[in-house]
Length: 288
Image (cartoon, rainbow, N blue to C red; front, side):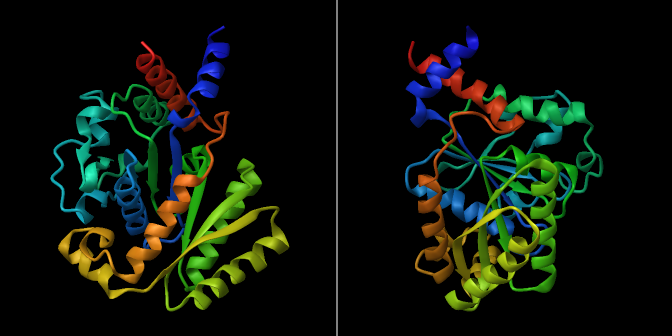
């Protein structure tokens, strides 16, 4: 009966469903967090209520990039000291940020129970959002895989370095072979031209087409832009500090695309499952 009601609410409130996007890349240093934040802010500029989850649980840097003061973080949520709503900090254009902790080895080695507790925290979230963007850690740890497979869309950020392509392929391979993920969206970052971005994508697809059963889609080519470095020094996002910059324009285009990506009717992973409870509760509250 409850499932029938939830299904009906999903159909009646399709526009209320929360879009969940994981931004990952395998290798560190490919600009993943910059892509995350600038996409989030661009979506907020277009009227969406956006939350960024800093899922680099041991080396948090989302709040640092924006110069935000953080008093509590996800470690306090896991310890039961506070709720997820209590740790949220507001960023540019009203985006909400769930900050992780930095320099904590224990946060990178969560038990299944602690991991479930973190996911459950989202089901109790009071803040209303349209989009959740998860900025994963580098590498292919269990935590990276968990958040990636739970998202509706996986953005894999790559740059024109052999190690970036190798690590991106390794991540895609594990998610495909071991977790049944078939679709990946690719962002070619810090490239010198559109042609270089296309060639980078071609290099990756050449390997995946040969060895994996996956569909890759190139959704953005973000040029190398000194304004990104300048904005980092200012502790601002490039779309805010230098809105006319080439990188800012490319990421606004990515955000526009991402807004139009469809949301599945059925949850595809455990993060979505718990978020669905939030969506159902939100829809029922709105209909009272």
